[in-house]
Image (cartoon, rainbow, N blue to C red):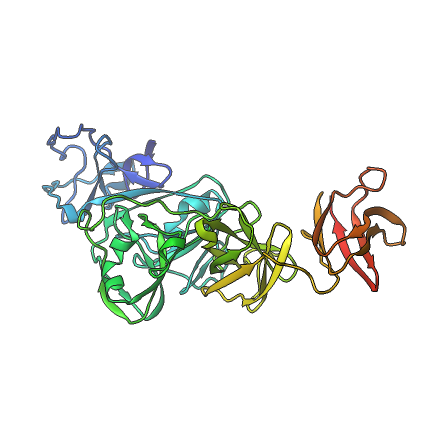
Length: 474
């Protein structure tokens, strides 16, 4: 906090907001006071005021949106007139939120009235701190200093993807409480705000849509994609709606004047926690689909089945839950804000890997689609020899190479440099049928680290030869 004089206001300033506020008195909860303001600020006509209460122990402050000072020859001086009487009603009070962003993508809403709706104003704190990377919605995008941006207004009824560059990014919203608490939903997908100031279980929030068999899916995004399917209770990851978050809602038929139930009117009492899908090899972004299903064969509850792209990138991870079911989990496409291709392309085939065995599938990536898979690992035996592309590639310092052996016989896999000089023998043994994985740490046959660059790895077996490239980066 600090003092500020300018042509808009005078008094203390919340620097995180950049908003001048005339803090007149501090009170304790339940201890109201009255004060004559005529000697402090004088004006005439109708003025607009706000009363902000962050929590019962916070200060209560009056502030004015009008110009309170006149710039005269001798400097700033108060305007001379009579201060009007003040009265407040609950629906006209100012509300404030301190919303923390995680590094990367966030799905939020700004459910307030009385704000300057331009993204440059709403996200001024992030822009000032050089932490705002991108704002995206079905209605357009905003990127700081990009003249081609198509999003010029933040609607209090919509949801927005925000990409932040800092792990401790905060933004402060301050405005009137949401006055028109109803939403119009179209058939299909809708990206909407969650405007209540309280949490709700998802079954309570959408009870009417569920009872009418009109709700298909609800999807959220908090450290990654979350989903609620009313027909698949056991594998859902989204259970609770949170204030100032945004949510995708897919319905069969359009609905006018949808609203969330009032606090305390819901049928359930216990709040159910969301099941966040966090895996260190997966990079969440707004382009995703959902995959659920079942695994057959030997498995451990709590293990992960990884989802691979055609070039062996890890684009998703699905946790095995009780009964061998695969929790409904996001599989990610490419993050359009990065230069590298770090996810699936539309129409690309998915494969699944668990305990070193990889199964192909006919599932193709399409954003906001839902697929189900059955993975049978109980009798996986390759029908042909195969040498797979290493992953990750490029790599530093470790990469994995998988290969298939259909029959008993000798198998060798050797790393060569570009001149054909042998660098490292990875495999030289008689192998039984199965799928194998070998890890290479970028060292030669003498255990010494090799220099960065392009290398080849060659597999030989009876009647089979295959060579692939790999890249070591340091």
